[in-house]
Length: 471
Image 1 (cartoon, rainbow, N blue to C red):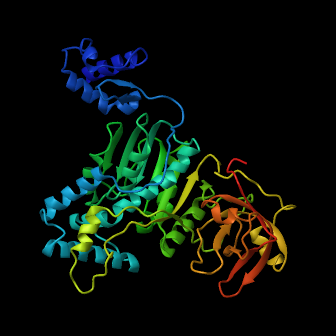
Image 2 (cartoon, rainbow, N blue to C red; image 1 turned 90 degrees about the vertical axis):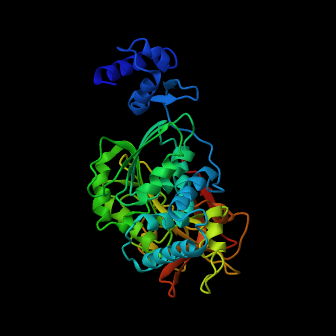
Image 3 (cartoon, one colour; image 1 turned 45 degrees about the vertical axis):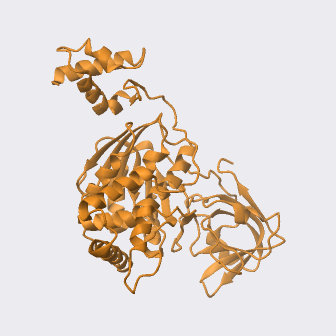
């Protein structure tokens, strides 16, 4: 179809969409040369985002509604079968139907072990085709789940439009893309751009083929440093990639110019100490230009934390995908431990940054009512009131007193809330979600020499209330 015909298709679609669903067969009557309806459908698909058109099951198109995207989100229980099948087909193509067994299975397991070792020691990884497949087998399910938990909060807060433009920098094998595709409802139109320079694009392309017709995808096979963003994006994702960049702060700072004025820059990292702390370092380096929306909200004006910042969220584990179970059960070498190649934990560090100054918790404490964590040395051995964000699940375990990391954005060293005596008046400390605002009254401030941290003791005399984010 030539340029004139394409323009005629666009013009007719723009006119008809305000009257009735756009039907390619109807448009055919008004286009010079009467191109086949299939050719018209292809043009409408290619230009769907610019035209703001959703494709229906019957082949017609209709305008996407204005307003914020809405979705009813619940826990992610498993990695979807359609994506599992697409991944397994890649293994069959590369290794044959018996890929978990024999020499091929041994090679895949060895590649996963190498990835774990390289990650532990911070070694660079060359993502050839075999390494990308091994990486996908081990990490794809967890990354698929993690991004949904983070983005669902932004959806719940009304921060994503139904017509959503997304840039996924360092898209890898597609975990974040698939999670986003399954999170958004059928009435959303997504223009998804992936930036990925490695052989991971082979896996990425295969799994993206399984996403819906209104999840429009394009892959840019280049580095984060070399890619030139085209226009503005409502969401810019850096999922599990910042730790692999030579200059993560410089890259994030560069991409903030491509962020819409009301957009969100979301970065995720594995929950381990080094990468989670590295994420917080990037967050703190760019907060002069971008506001920390969540989870480590700065409650006190002009305050910036200086503790090490190790903080991460934990969600329910996934069902074990069949491809992980098969690879694990086929292992026969003496060094193998059951479950070595199963990875279903959903634990991650994240930050959400915005250019518009908004925070998920809009609450400013008063110095006449609350103690600042930056001044905690003046409150040791006293009972005080503190406003804080809950920044961990129970870190104690076993029979020890429950222990939770907390912060108010001013802390210079780590602060923990220690529950020594539970009561109905302090139960919110246990039940509040990661990132929630807690108002803690009559807690005892102590210094912990062993941990070089402050402990705020919550006992029978203390009251802890979880305050809604919009309070």
